[in-house]
Image (cartoon, rainbow, N blue to C red; front, side, top):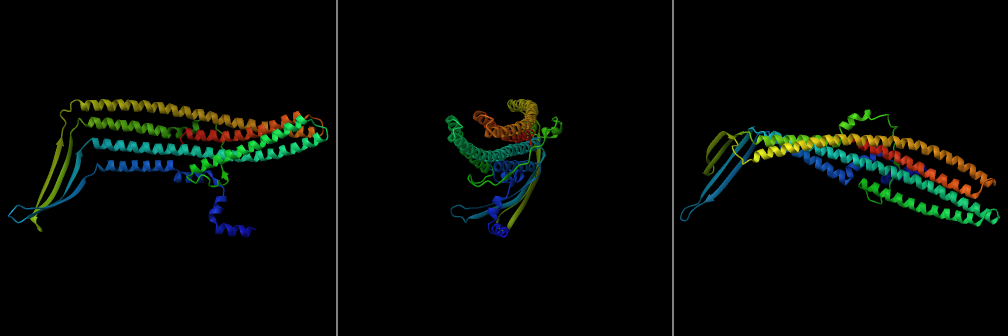
Length: 409
């Protein structure tokens, strides 16, 4: 049997891989390479990186090659040729607007990187939420199967007691209704699992109905006592980096507006060959420098500087607001994480108590020491506690994922 499974795995490696458990880190890597949103954000980041390179190129000299040819003539005369070719170059000597444009491109690149990191953080939260939802749904489905089996056994027991005259018809009808309700809930749980698996496949850029393998999600760590261990992550939060980049961009825009009042200088040179018949030619060259000094712009320079200063003040205010918002959001998520961890302990204790109580009351009912209605109530309470425990485990995973997102990781 073992040899057969090895042969099948060798012949069908894709099927063997589909049965292999999928860990969260592996799924996250696959998501970032196949998810359309992640791909679009990565392309935008690459575009910002290339724009930064283009802006930095303005600091260096530029060289050009040119050539021209023309053939002309007039009536009664032979046509003549004219051509020219050569090289030219220029180098900015003093141009404050160019460093400002480089700084603006650097800020745009930082903003694009922050946006990409923010998207990765959000997708990571969505993926962990999908993991937790699928794992919870699968466990709920297993619990529902056990409940169905227990409901069927209960119905058979009540039917035997009813036929023996030891139980009333109301108990029989209520047990039948409980079994039908359990079947309906089982179908609902299967539908919810299917929807969760479709969402998971969409996150990973896969076909909607592609089978989802077994998922492995590590348990959330125990929350620490305070937020001090996460200060570095808060300072490097994508929202704060983006807000700081907006401030840098506004300062660069202010410098660019201020540079309109300053002179600009550049050096230019060229060498050119021209003639009327190849290879006959004559050469000419030129070297020089130019200076440009603004004298009057109708108040436009002053208005642009005032607008740039207003934009800078707005960006600085947004940075202060973002800093406060990030810290408050992280604190709220941290408190929710601690609350979810505490609630899981409560749910576990309640489940243990409900299981012990259900076992005892069932034994008492079989021995005729407890009524049907007490037994039914305890059974329903046990099912509720089992579902509550699963929900508490999922809530803890989501609370930890929300905290990780809140600190920008």
